[in-house]
Length: 196
Image: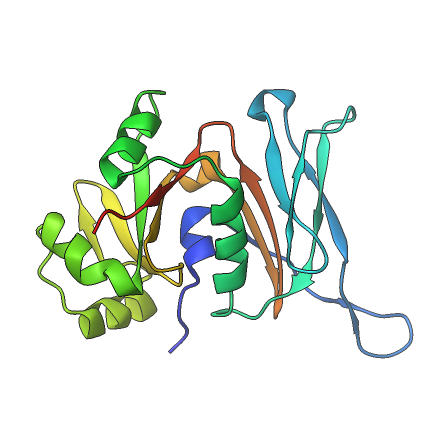
C-alpha cells in the first residue's frame, strides 16, 4: 500500500515527471522556478541538499526551489529544519488562535508520535498509536476534528505544527525519490512546543 507523506498533506502537491535524457536514462531537474506574488511575503524554499533557505519573491515574480534526494517517508529531517525556522508559540491552542486571527481557517495539526497519547486525550480522540499509524498510511491523516485533519508526524518529541489549507501554505514537488518544497511563512504556519 502506498502511504502519504506529511508534507503532501500540508502543502499543495505537484508531481513532476522525469524526462528522458538525450543520451541514456532520465534527467532530473535540480531547480524549479515557481511563480509567486510579492504579497505572499517571505518564503522558505528547499535547496539541493535537503535544507531550507529563507528567500523573497524575485523581481520577475518567481521563487527558485531546489530539488533534493529525499525519498517518501524520509521527510523527518526536513520537517525538523522547518520547525527550527518558523515562529513558535507555547501551545497548540495559541497557534490555532494565531492562525485564525488572520481570518484563515486551520486545516492541519501535526503531532509528534511521542506526544500523541497526551494530545489525543486533550482532543478527545480515541485512537491508539498503532491505529493512528495505520490511518496515516491508508488515508493520509489520523482523524478529522471539526474540519481539521489531525496528522501524526515524524517531528522532534515535544513539538507540533499547525497549518492552514495547502493552497495557502505552499507547494510540494515530488519526482520519484526527489523532493522540493516552497513554504509561505507569512503567518501561514506556526510551530508549537507541546505542553506535557
